[in-house]
Image (cartoon, rainbow, N blue to C red; front, top):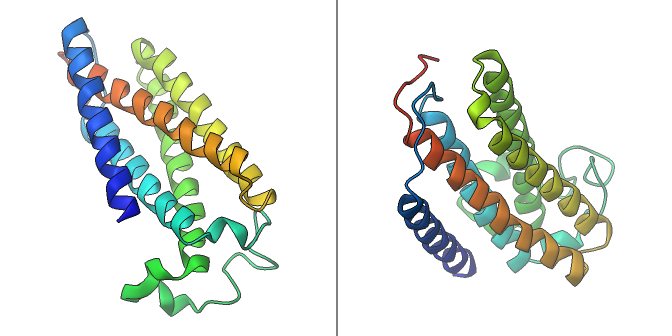
Length: 187
């Protein structure tokens, strides 16, 4: 219920910000990204926020206070790999932390693809937005790691959660800018 409550709040924030951007009537008549790229990136961020709510609700940030390994291994040693495919995976704090970490890695890799496409296709109109998105993503990752090291100290945990608002906002802005352009790249 906590994660659903949080995700609904982020959907409301997204809709309000989207309508604000529509009122500003921003438009661009140049090349843009394939529309799937910013949509998929935003979906990944929303999934990560949902997993973050599970991490918070299960106090999963208080276990495995090391990085990049979870204890002495990449996979949590108190879980079995097959637990990833069970329905109760979201009830296991170790598995939830594992999923949250690995989705962060996937998001970072996908961001690097966006950055690469920005330079490769000369999409310099998006460069400032993509750089801010990268900064906020990097900040999220650093705050997440520091939260782990601190045993989920409330100040760092709160900063990690609050900065997710800014990350979602810049991702919505990126999606909005891309949706209001007239030309589309084929890749």
